[in-house]
Image 1 (cartoon, rainbow, N blue to C red):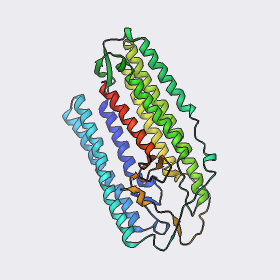
Image 2: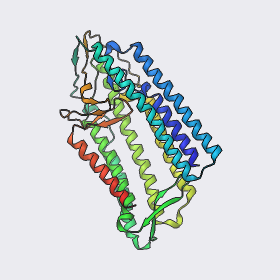
Image 3: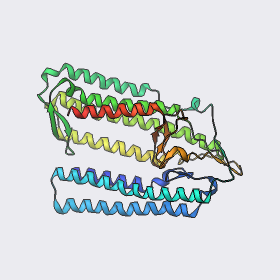
Image 4: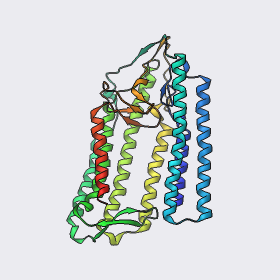
Length: 368
């Protein structure tokens, strides 16, 4: 069963990585801003198609090697897990290498040929944008946190009845394969980690409202509606992830409190359901919405503005992936290469949040 799970994850990973350029804005390719005058540059189109073809080809090779190895060698469960993780990493390394190569080449073309020279850069600011956002209220994310907190308190009230060894990890087959000594901290570690994840998703939902909208100067109405839809769908995706994480972690916490009722088949089914919901939601989000809502059809014609382009902010994007702008109040910004959001590394709140998240995860891991 673990081999099947890794095969599904690998196929999903390969597909998303290969077709990622299809889900992004035309004005951003491999982390580089592309002005309207060069959107249809044949070299750019060839570069995107070549990227997709190479990622698919190499991904299929990795997939065939993994399946062949499992069928021929018949490895043990732990070996399958190791192979599965290795193939996942391998399926990410190649796209990142191709991204780096294309990013450097594209940035050099733009610089050497002076794509933005002689054009006026403008940034559109919509003061009413935030008022028309349709994000889910924060209470949608707080209620699952209250449920997790209540489950944590209940687990502590049952402390004396719990076994001396508590499960801390469950393998792909649904069986617990790692344990730790019972303590007040170990009993609370799983709910604590869940609260950290829920708090992070709550933070993301709120930060989207404060994030500046990238409205295009030549198609203000269309890009504005797409931006509104993009954030609405993102809010719903965060909510789906919150509920799914809450249910899975809550079930695992109950197996700690009531180990006699634990069923490996139910644990396995819960894990598979979790993966199906998360992967299905992300796939729907990518195909339906795309980055910045560019896949959402909006019937507004482009405006004719000769010699005017959107503001080129390449200088704030380090390697096209890390946004660093101390003058931007946005904590979160839209990714340039990928679906979703990233943090503004020039904002101190982003660093505080990141350090709190990493610190919390490390704290929980030390309890295992």
